[in-house]
Length: 303
Image (tube, rainbow, N blue to C red):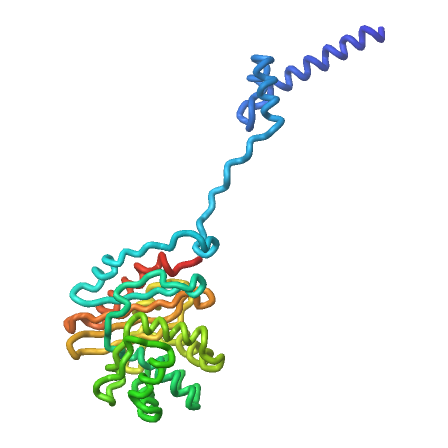
């Protein structure tokens, strides 16, 4: 009786195992039980392979602009930048403070009227001479021309430009021919980028803090009512920015400049200088500067 029961028990177990194999859904990952049952040899081969599972396919990843410092830099079409300012001139510099090099440079030595960008030098001189930081900050944040004129007169006028051009090494920066017209100072995109590098890397902590607070608090409209959020502020989206803008008209052209630092830890120095036809309005001219900065985003957005 015991032997018969053992035989039936063994047969029942075998039949149960076969039924379980046939009832396993063939859609699960890996070889199906039906395939195993069809060929003993095939089943053994598949089983042998399954002892060393295949490596899963690599997960898709989003390239990080900052994670791979050895990758080729983003390419910006220089001619395309020039085409964004029809009938005018444009110069561009983007300097990466992490890579310590220019990632974009277009006509960087071309000379332009500075408009309010010379206020960066006025600010450096005034703070060195002991001017109240609040006065300097207002001159920069709202681009106040009256304050700039007072500080220009008080601290040496054209000599301000000469002193700082020598100190920082600004080969293309020269005082205005008319000593009273500080906005006619001559500048280049390369030199404005150097001013920001000096400010971020060499200026005293107090000077840097005062100026950068002002630039990061730039108001949407300047003291003269002109909207100064064209260029960098309008183009870079959620990236942090600190800006100094310049605009002037109409001694032969309409000047619209956008400059500043962009990105986490002020990584990128961005300078866009333009000279546009006098028939261009501030609104349309500002949009062109914004379009130029948007075209630079592959070299700026390091998120």
